[in-house]
Image 1 (tube, one colour):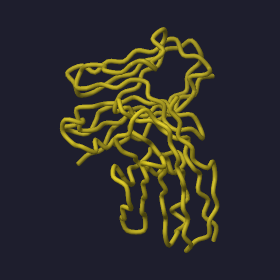
Image 2: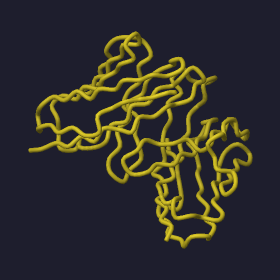
Image 3: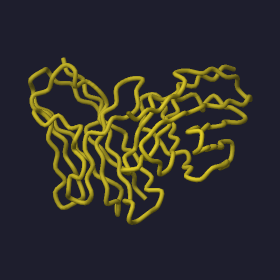
Length: 117
Length: 109
């Protein structure tokens, strides 16, 4: 079974530029998560999708961040414009969903390391 | 507020045993997860506890006491490849996953 796929793996941009990250979850996983992780910290949830619906985006800075999950499969996370403080690793994770599996374990992609100069 | 506490860093010797503790205060409880994260890589799932007691998986075991808001991850026969960060995460009453900051484990020969 293929894992969660993310691209790009690394991205370096100048501040005020836009950037986009792409995620393809594990086949059959209904729930998709975008996290931000700073060095030495645990992941911080940005947004959670159940199929194509964003069910928790309370931590997403909506003035500059946006996300979509068209057709309930792939997802894109965008930042426009990027700020210096956005430098971090952006992780995508997927799970079957609580209706499908009691443990609803999240499986992570390799992440995108963003550096904003 | 919700809180998960883990030691920031631990050091252990190859071949030994180490216990990484996690204490939590959350609004409700629907399971506790342990993940391993090597430097520069994504977290990978290690274990899940929802009932009190010990779950064993090879060299790794995880323990849960819901009444004490406490869990530990026990690693036996430590190998150099076990050098990583270990993240504790609790699913709260709203089924949100609350993450600890992680414990960096350093294995010395």
